[in-house]
Length: 310
Image (cartoon, rainbow, N blue to C red; front, side, top):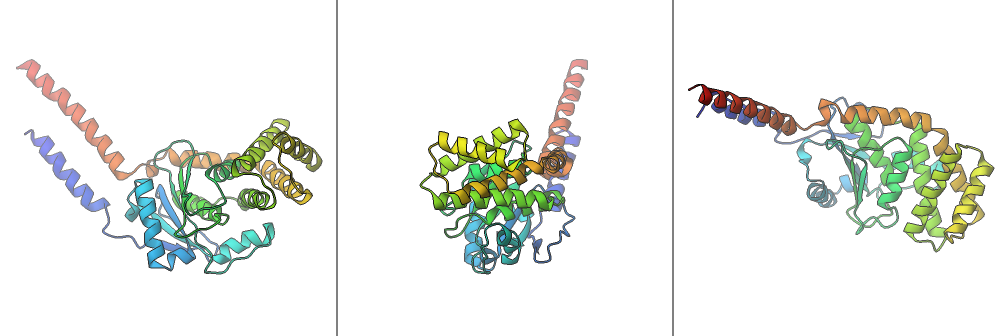
């Protein structure tokens, strides 16, 4: 066997030993509200504190991420989102508060594939918020890349999971999402949940209502509250959805907030795109295999040249 190839195989074995850790202890709490993470990794997991504090729950969630995300969780950056974190958002939006035993939803974000935004939701445990709802809220915040997976060890509405998804993006990229974007996205999720509770509309109907309204508002490029209310009424009527006045006002406020932060959303979208195209977003194995393929192609050419000259 060619001596260079033998040397390369030894290099690969050494590289695997160096870059695959035996275990990971990179778990951070978000109680302080600060992001001290400096290790950029394309895969990040955010556990609800209830799940994280229960070994059985955490095992169920890890197994789900492992089998559905097809990634090595040992290398993932891991954070915990607490009731305190969720309540900072929900208190002003829905007037709901949660205790430390109610934060079950967990999220994983994988930016290594550099594809369009894909959201998978565990329908067996997440009962209210759908994949399309998360995707709509994330897109409004400038997040249009990555594979997002949301699950819970037991049934949960999924309302608080968006905070975890966004925390995973911050952890993966090392870049904080502006507070205005977070608030607008979470307002959208909570408003959709409220409409589902108050009406007989299906999840698909509410998805249509939100998406069609946002499209029309964007087309008219307006943040005028009355104009948005008119658009909501027209879209709701076309889809046979009977909204309460409170639903209409909250939805108009949500979409107005989303529309007003589009400049910030575009900026964050650019940051996500830059990270997704960076070397950090490629796994060490992708880089290693690319190198091996390049080496082998070059070695093959050298062998052929040697054969041709003999």
